[in-house]
Image (tube, rainbow, N blue to C red; front, side, top):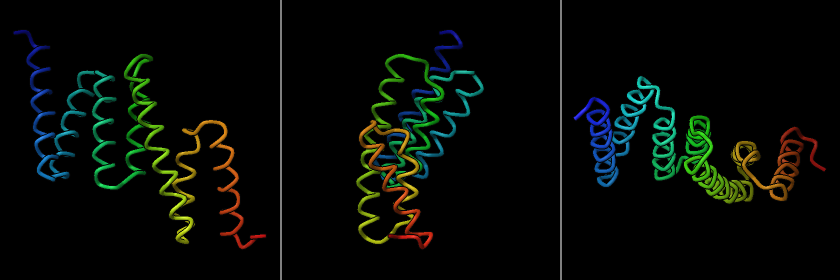
Length: 152
């Protein structure tokens, strides 16, 4: 077994450990394992590996209900992927998370949490298709005007 295979086996074992921690609801421990994996692949200069870890961290953030962290992890994942299947999958995942964030943002807005809605809307704006982006951009402007005391 060469060094690359040994390292790959170690990383796979760490992923299995993180999965076990998640299945037990030990999210903090799983995050620590993912951070260890990320540091390892960074040292190796394996950018695709960083992308994979960040997708895993995005999924973990979603389990925790932290959609803003999930979106940030997806941005980093995309920065580290080369064009191809992994990049397409990351873009699809980012879009799905953005649509969930849009729904949460609309609920926040309806519940009167305008700052929370604004934060989500601004974060997801670049990830939306043209039609949704136009609607969200308009809503961002409405919320900003209202928060500045210039509501019409």
